[in-house]
Amino acid sequence: MGKLAVFFAEGYEEIEALTVVDICRRCALDVDMVSVTKERTVRGSHGICVQMDKVYAEADFEGYDMLVLPGGMPGTKNLEAHQGLMDWVDRFYKDGRYIAAICAAPSIFGHRGILAGRRACSYPGFENHLEGARVTKGPVEIDGHVITSRGMGTAIDFGLAIAGIFVGEEKAADMAEAIVYRS
Image (cartoon, rainbow, N blue to C red; front, side, top):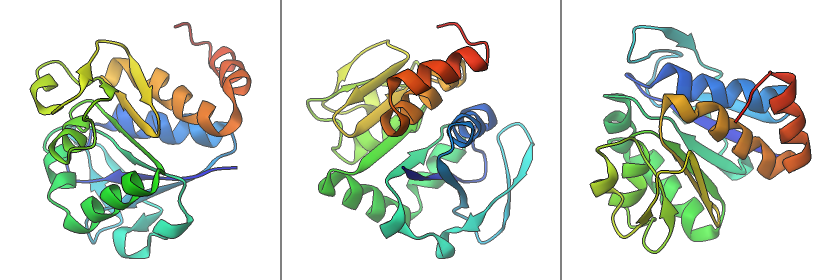
C-alpha cells in the first residue's frame, strides 16, 4: 500500500510537513513522522512544536517506500547536515525508490547530483541549487522516482501527488474533492 517517512528537523516548515502527513494518512497510507534530532518533539520554523512518531534511530528505512523532506529554514540545512539521513537519501535514489522534497529541500537533491537531467522545482531563489535540473515553475514535478515541489502554497498539490503514487490518481482526485481543494 505504501509506507512513508517524513523527516522533521528543527526549523522545518510546518505546513509543508504536516500537509503531506495529513493527506497521506487520510488516504490510509502508513506515515511515520521522524525526528532527526534525539528528541520526540520538534519545533518548526514558526515556533510550532509537533510530537513525532519516531526518532531517527528508530526508523525502519528498509520498510519505507518513500522518504519525504519538508523545507523551511533552518530545517532544510539541518536535514542536509544529518549524514545518516543523507546516506539513506542517496541509497533510495540509487535503488530507484521514491524520494520527495518541497520548498528549499529540493536543493538537497541538487547538491547530491540527484536532479541532473530531471524536471524539478523549488522555492523561488533556490533554483540555482537544483544542479543539472530542468527547472520549472510547476507546483509539483514528478520525474521518475524523484518528486519536488515549490513551497507552502503547493503543499496540498505535493501531498496529493505523493498519495496518488500509492493509491492512484483517481483516489487522489477523490481526496482533493473531499478536502474541498481546487487546483
